[in-house]
Image 1 (tube, helix red, strand yellow):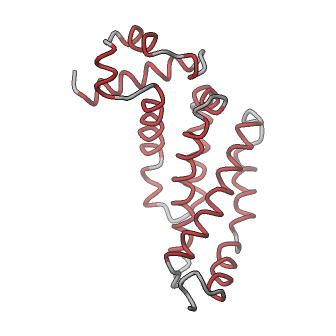
Image 2: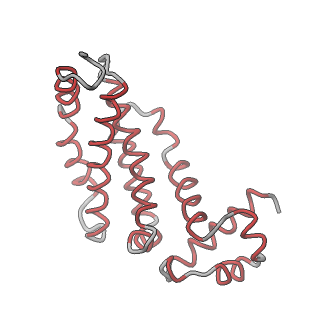
Image 3: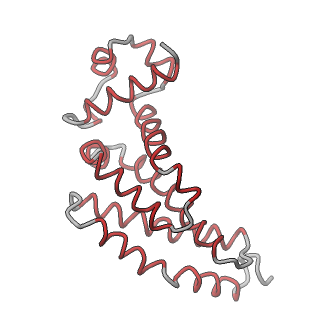
Length: 191
């Protein structure tokens, strides 16, 4: 078995276990027995269950949104994230309701802030790195918190409504933030 296929097997087993068991209650023994692997094999690849969980999200979400780097419309990429969560609802909900919630939120933030960065790039305006980071941070977390609210409500709200709410926030908001940031010193624009 190759290194990558072993990791995939562990990932698939973790996802299967999380369909019925919160991640906080999954042990290395449970995981390795179900995967028909040894504890040593697990520890060769991962430090703990949470490092495996982080790897799963990176693999799954990056594969799901690999095309988002080529997408000029942030809404398409945002929908891909929501689609992933909906398709993997139990897995995401079990992460969301565990001590690993910050891992999910952090990964969502990295994707969301990249989306905001693409909106800034497509504005075709000269924006300093400091201002870009400030805008990505603010709006990236705003997008994540919309997803968190959606998760907290058990995905009951239609995805289209979540995207529409984000569009209300982003439409014109980023341009206004760029304009305001360029008028203030401290963002590398005027002083």
